[in-house]
Image (cartoon, rainbow, N blue to C red; front, side):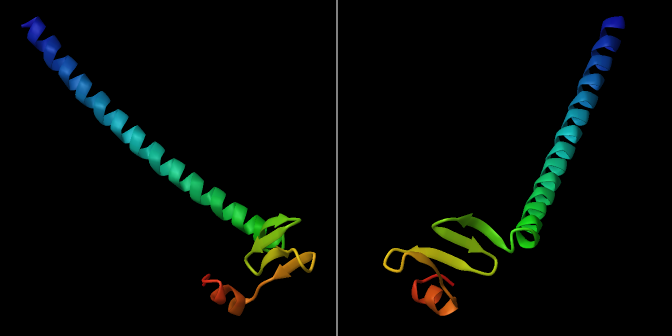
Length: 92
């Protein structure tokens, strides 16, 4: 009888550990997803407020919420494209 009780208790403990591990893994997934969302929003807010909406601000290109500027070789300066130019390039 003792061996049978031990086996039942061990099986019950294994099931509980499996459920606990599954719950912790599920909670970890949700926490990491929430952390990723918060980090993304924080970086976008930083770019919007402190970098004047520029996500990429390099000497030869500037891409942001409000502008799309590429280096123009012939003019030797950044050329900012508006919606008409972008649509002509196939970017909408």
